[in-house]
Image (cartoon, rainbow, N blue to C red; front, side, top):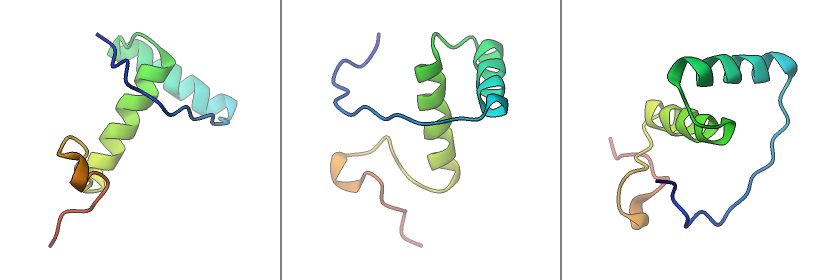
Length: 66
């Protein structure tokens, strides 16, 4: 079920190539919408960069200490 507590809206501009890549990835992953695909890719990118996003609010967006 979708998280209905989302309060922020972002607007982004993409090239045709980026939209095609997004749509191809979304189709391959069987994602329900472009927005869901963008959220998933953003989450994956943040995690790959060491950001913990699925933790308590007080730590969101902070890099883990080394």
